[in-house]
Length: 378
Ligand SMILES: Cc1cc2nc3c(=O)[nH]c(=O)nc-3n(C[C@H](O)[C@H](O)[C@H](O)COP(=O)(O)OP(=O)(O)OC[C@H]3O[C@@H](n4cnc5c(N)ncnc54)[C@H](O)[C@@H]3O)c2cc1C
Image (cartoon, rainbow, N blue to C red):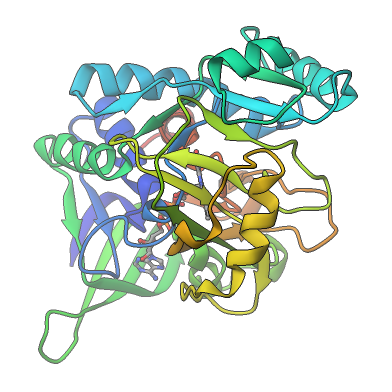
């Protein structure tokens, strides 16, 4: 039977960033990255805003705050080194009041997270920079940017393969059997004809299956149910805007604590194409379908800060689904990175709830799992 040092389940941006960080630290390790789809990044990692977040919103001391701030720096450095396209265009969090306490508390929160570069902007300052925006005050975050997430994942995969990563697309992990110091894994390979089964061994198994982390965890023999947090799916739709893009920055409304996301904001890709979203809707099963039914609700939300919006120029674009571990009305959950100590299973690391800012944090998540493996031994 084939044996690997590490098996990573799931080739989204997290599995790819982990492969890269692992092989940078352990160049001689044998690492296999298993992906059920025909290519990498077909789910959450390609259905997102592509924003490099600054680290403003997350509770101080949380993994989200720590890994976002560290990950942002690592991501900009990675993009510079490997020529991954990005633009540090900055972001405005806008308010319709000139003495908004939410902005002040966001700034305080950001400082506690190590983000010290926020600027408070007045209505006049906003009007000069973003004449199409209606707002009385804003927080400007200069370190926020946008990145080509597909190119990022392509680079992470290429660099990992140069160091010997075995990437196995069209392969689904169907069950995981811990035995003493390692795992025996059952997979099914879908190569167009009849699916084949393939069994192999790995010393470490890292569950990076995103929306399916809980399902994959359930296939781990004898894993106590208490090690598997409940999964909540929260869909976010995006609309493209066919009109001219009047914005030079990303524009975000104030976060609504009752909503599960950051509010319908403007984002743009590297070619400057304007898009709005995502909204937040809890759903029962992963479903990426999107219709124009929400156009009016989107137009209403966007017109609060962009009054000249022409609603008929909003066209349904795509949807992503947040892999949450907290439900409607609950306090937002943190990232969960559960190692052998948490599960009692040597060599097992599981990730749950890797929603936003997971893209920003991907390299730091990869590096923290690598540290965990280093502390124990490969
Ligand atoms: C609407 C939305 C907007 C977002 N915007 C941003 C943003 O602007 N900035 C930011 O930093 N973050 C953002 N995020 C968060 C970010 O997209 C995610 O944190 C990140 O993409 C998660 O990556 P992942 O690798 O964990 O998951 P995924 O990309 O879903 O990858 C998991 C992979 O595991 C595979 N898999 C599952 N089960 C199996 C199995 N049994 N065998 C083999 N393979 C399996 C899946 O096919 C999939 O490819 C956003 C998320 C959403 C939903």
